[in-house]
Length: 299
Image 1 (spheres, one colour):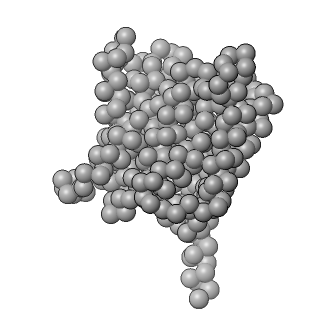
Image 2: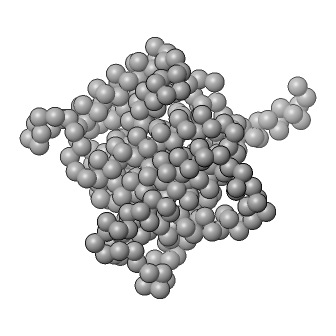
Image 3: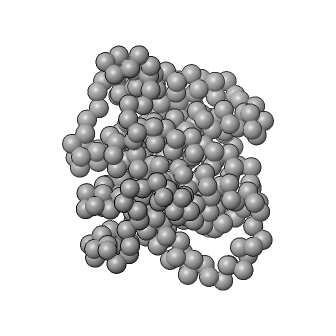
């Protein structure tokens, strides 16, 4: 390989790693602006609707010339859109009302569900490391969730934690659909995610006691935060997708775990949240399980 090619490949790798780290940084911090919007009276459903709608509009204008290909997309993108839509909405609702680290760790049980779904739906053979990941995830969840003063069963203790658990399951479903729908472009998958959140939030509106806030009732400062989140969503989707196409799945999965470190530091300093010893131990096992599950899908 020529020296210029080596330099070019190294620069691509470096930018890909930056993209993944940026994604982990954003997802480890994005709960905070959503909480700020919630504190000003804008519900999680409403803030999700406007942030993802704005992201869809901005990206739609940028990719305007590709809109003619919309009607050529297969039906699998609909299921991807709905699964990803629920994943992102339930995650936002969870981090607004729940403890950030408990929500994050419950979400990171997603490798467990991905392994199970990949085994039974995609008929992929589970490696020994996969079985270790399943056992370690379950043990970590048991240690973190078990509290005899609340329940004899190791279950989520409130609605936010159930949302976090469902977000992880939704994320796993999205991963399985994505792995199966290799014919979809990265651009199509991005729009599927953004539009999916918009559709799912609209489906939730009839069940809200207050309904969806009209755009003219949103304050200027709230719109600034909404715009900031929308721009971050576009940037993080683009950079992360570039990263995962350049970096092996095993390495990318480990890099993504930086999100937990970011969330832990941010929740401590921004929300004064701390973790108990059993939460730390259970969380460590869940992170270890994520690493094991990554080796099960090694390229």
